[in-house]
Image 1 (cartoon, rainbow, N blue to C red):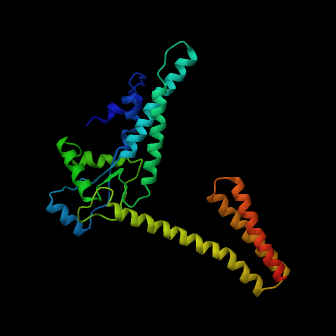
Image 2 (image 1 turned 45 degrees about the horizontal axis):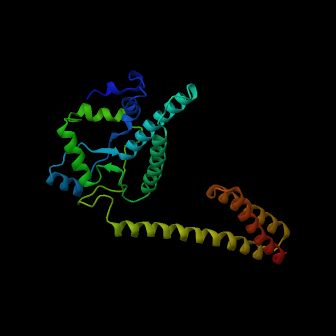
Image 3 (image 1 turned 60 degrees about the horizontal axis):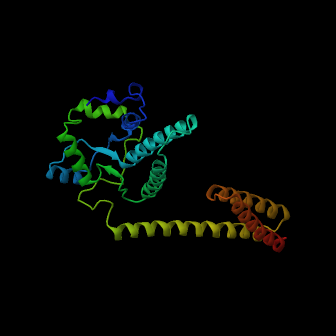
Length: 264
């Protein structure tokens, strides 16, 4: 494998065919070595299925980033051509349409990264993924020596894992079953909602208890100030629109002012 061929410094950017240059900029992120090892149960299953010990991780998301970069190159060239000579016929509409769709696809891939089993990650922790990657590498005689395999350690911008919670000891469907995915997604969303419910209750009940148990003007003022500042900071962290942050902070402050009026 001649990795040096694809180093960006040695491949000029040819706008008529930017693929080689784009590949030189992304090749290091396509595949990495997983440094972890399967547990005994998982290793036994791999031995039974004649799966080797060259555990890899590959990223389909990086392929999409390559596509975005290639389309970016084409659009940049179109803009330069139009600016230099407006009479030059430039077919930029199709590339722009593809770029917009590619960004939407990448946003979807980003959402999928929150799933328990990301379908755009191919990781050796998953039994079938491990088998496919090792077979593909064996057919191309890739990373078959220890020197080649461990050389991947020097090319690890995306880390070395773990990319899954545990090594599989049995085969599972790619991306998980639909019902299992829905159940895990619902459960995760429920835990998030429950956490926010507890947090909201805490922001109301904690200052109420403090001001009722310690009925002094200074205690009420300090408690109100501290909780409003913390609450406003959390809103600024979680919310995107400044108007929503201001409205939420003012509403919370108004509630605490009522507590102060009742306590003092």
